Image (cartoon, rainbow, N blue to C red; front, side, top):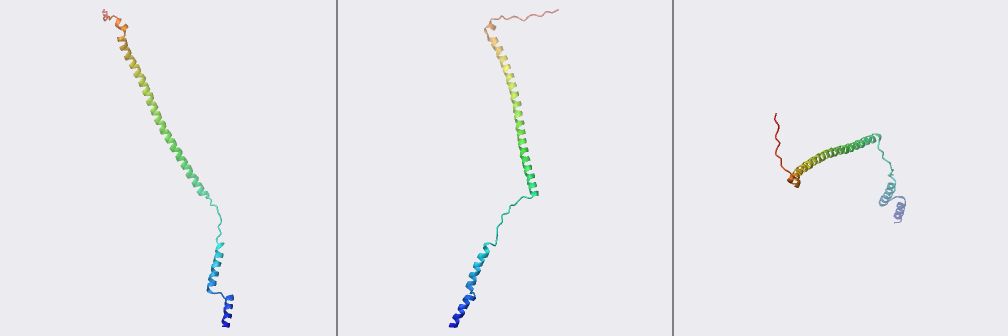
Length: 130
């Protein structure tokens, strides 16, 4: 037995057992994995071709918005113009109707007034014939 204890002490110090080698591998893997990957911040920039395409697309969008606004303004302008013409026509018609109503009312007033009742009716004048 003395001999086997001597071997055990030598194996414990010099030779690793299965469980100690697995524990050692786990420790080294953890240690190795800590600084294996390094993260570097890199700024992504747009290249000159992409930048040019982006500017062209933005210019087209602004142009479309401008055209939409101009078209809408013109259509409102046509509507306003037609409504103004209709208003002028209605005002002229109103003025003509007011004149006609005043003329018709004045004839009735003159016929029914006290002065008109006191006038003498004259027979139609005869025409002179040669």
